[in-house]
Amino acid sequence: MAMTYGTKRRPPRREHKRRRSSGGWGALARLVTAATLFLVCFVGKTRFPQQTAVYQEYLSDALTGTTDFRAAFSALGEELAQGGDPLEAVGDWCVAVFAPAETTVDETLPTAAEAILEEEVQFFLTWDGDVEVLCAHLLPGET
Image 1 (cartoon, helix red, strand yellow):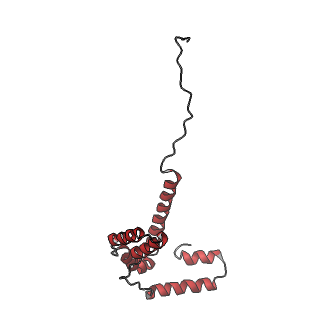
Image 2: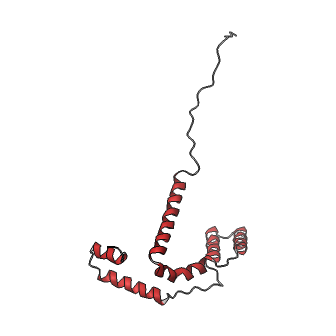
Image 3: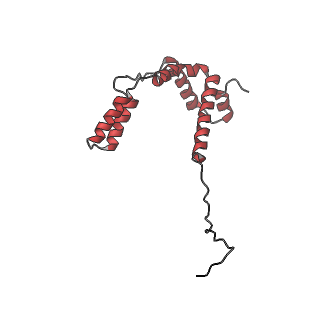
């Protein structure tokens, strides 16, 4: 066995793969979506305060509703443990969480919302396709 002195044996070079950050484009897309939703809500609230006030009660009821998540997850676990259909179990869970049986949904629109809806429907039924007329209707204060 021949020994050579002064030479170092180096391991073969490994090509380093670029690590992709966990955020990447998905995080950017979520950020852009959140910023867009914020701007739409902010502009809508400041430019059209009467129209947004109509729906404020409905939104606050939906956001502050009480849902028993423990019972919903418990029922989901029991149904899956019994060997039921997973899609049906998840569907039942979604109904229990997002549309509980004890809450009633008032599907009637307030009179102000009905008036606004009727006005918009009439405008679009009689609109001749002129973009300037559309802009003047949607942005009434600007010239």
